[in-house]
Image (cartoon, rainbow, N blue to C red; front, side):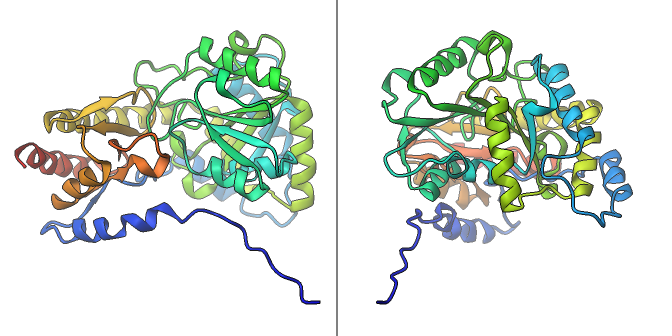
Length: 372
């Protein structure tokens, strides 16, 4: 008997649909300004690069759990920057960036057919990809009352991608309480927390004592240094929370060999301990955001949410793809809200991650949309 291979059933990669609009934007006489991807363009801070360089004699296998110094740095950072008390090194674990952890978390938690993963109504696509890899189903809902009884994992994303929405302490608490009623794990993807435009303080963590009291059971916080420290190329992330879940994830990751490289672990320690570079980067993004926001609103768009993070969530009441096409005509590439589910047919996501010169050029071009 010949075995039949059943391929993974994953959705089409949405960015492929954006290619013709990118081509149109590149035809602009002055070339394309790409506001579609949230990838850092500013240099990695020198003190972090120096730490990486000093650790390049990495002849031994690194620890999956992270060095004691790294885990202690993560604990200290949560206390200092996120107001999270009571963590120990048993409550934290480094990852190879945050996206791989998000994608593999349902499988690592043992989810499968018949289980439900809840995601936000407007959601980063990797939450659904992770469910698909595990064979679980996805429900999009922001209302805990609507979460089905067979929910086993809830993804929260605050600050949100693409919409920059920030959930308050009361909203997070209600979500944690409902997840616990269902016996589900709840995880908040918090990687934009330091880029809060209403304050220089980070946005609330799901591990905040005001949210969970002194009970971390079934609760996880996922974080990345890609955004705050320009470490996207380093793949530097971590997860914190329930020590039982952390131990479970550590066991799986040991078997799979999911090990952050030793030089990256050393660089993470320095990045977590220094606030000056984060403050400087935040101000760069704040300036770019202010200029782009004024231009987009001047062209007749409304900005929704966008209280934090690296994007403007914009609409002027037309089909998202029509807006993408209009931007492409002036040489600017943006992303349709439809990439993030069926609940944003008229929004586009506009990234702040371009140089100051590109922002100035984009502002001039976006002014042309108001005259179109």
